[in-house]
Image (tube, rainbow, N blue to C red):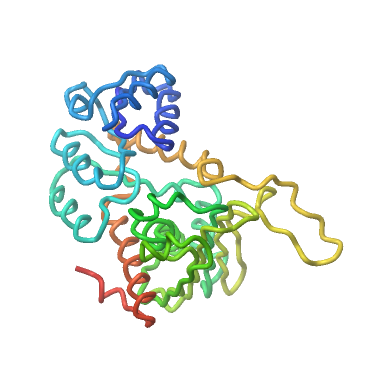
Length: 332
């Protein structure tokens, strides 16, 4: 296979390195709006570089998109128009109208589109989903999701991130749907600003909580913060009438028991998402190779990304208006 990659920032460079390590991948071509950055990444990785326009005449078999969010719609559509299977990191677009426009534009095409929700490829989340599907947990009554970043991103990132629910919580919303097999019917969300002023200046919050009511009555809670000084902490408790499981509870979880005589976890905590989900990212890209080769359909399409975005949008409305919001209110 010959694969292209658009966007040579941190995650793009990591993905390019992973791709070139697959036996099935013969060559990788990277591109970026910043040509110098693309050339530097290519030299470091030992791969080819090109302009974004040249990617579509470079004889590719598939395209991986890790560029800035505002470039996602155009690159997805250009890839589909060129007949190239495309993997794009979330989101499809910066907002719901933009996401719907992309979906409308590619509807009817048989060119596969895969959106990057790497938690679906994490061994722990996959095991939890299998436990739910098998019935071994009984019927679900509660899911508790946490995404706690150890330190906030830069102010310029926050200003264009879409907010904590859309940028961060969307991963929890997607994985709750995927693990439970249910849809979200209603949300009630709140948020707070205890840290840097730039969150409030951007109309965002640095800490948030949401209660989701699923369509069968199961309750889910999602907690998020940009200021978890103990370390990167992403977990999901899946609790049923018979048993329960926890995803993300391991020796590197940044947790310390207050009970006497309980030994601390050995650590050290994961410094961030790239380290915590390194194996999941590799598995996700390997799945994309199966999509490119025609061996499997896309495991996470644009419609899945839209559903998670609807939940995030409902949470943002709920936070601003301080009321429960039904998903029907934000669907278009």
